[in-house]
Length: 245
Image 1 (cartoon, one colour):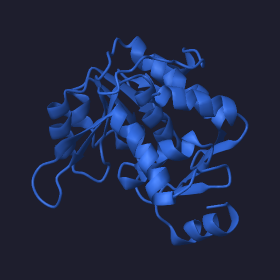
Image 2 (cartoon, helix red, strand yellow; image 1 turned 90 degrees about the vertical axis):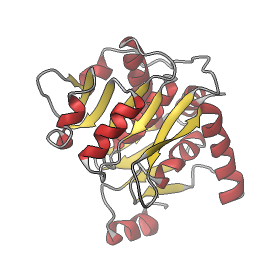
Image 3 (cartoon, rainbow, N blue to C red; image 1 turned 120 degrees about the vertical axis):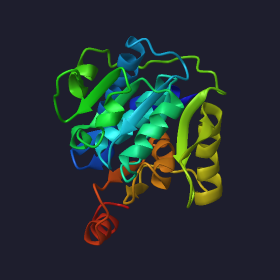
Image 4 (cartoon, rainbow, N blue to C red; image 1 turned 180 degrees about the horizontal axis):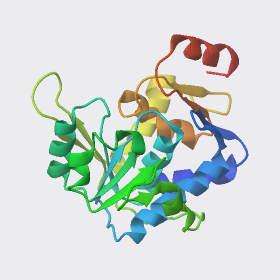
């Protein structure tokens, strides 16, 4: 079992059910599953090998869910750049992890200038700049069919950089095996039951942080995720009262 297999199963089993509601609107499991596999195939087409690092610089939005699961489905290692960090930390992380690909939202274009100079490929969301690859075009050229790879469970799925309260960010290693174990632990130890279509998770805080741990569990069991661009008490209350959260 790996992330790609889980995505393919949910894509098939819950095809017409809403998977994500976010700033860009609503998208079904079938639709987002297709985009996840298009991204996975496009990344592999760049020549990336299992465990290669891919930087991801986004705030809370629908494409964050796609990139999270797409990078994992390709057997690659995702390195999320917390948008709240200073750009000097982004540079330090980029050099430390050795990433050559950056997926980023165009709104961070100026701040990410030093990072852009380090990587070989820049996939740009919601924008076009010379020398970059438009995200939608990057996906459009690839098949929507599931990409099922025999991913080594002990290969890296993510490097999660944290400095605690002091010092420079250091990468905490997470493997594919660990991510699947985390899925099981979240379901059994936190919720104490199997999630289902009546469940709903609100990403009110940054998905780059703890909220991101719940992306795969909710996707795996056909439960909806609501992505808030930023924390707004009124929107959170509305999601709880009227949208099933």
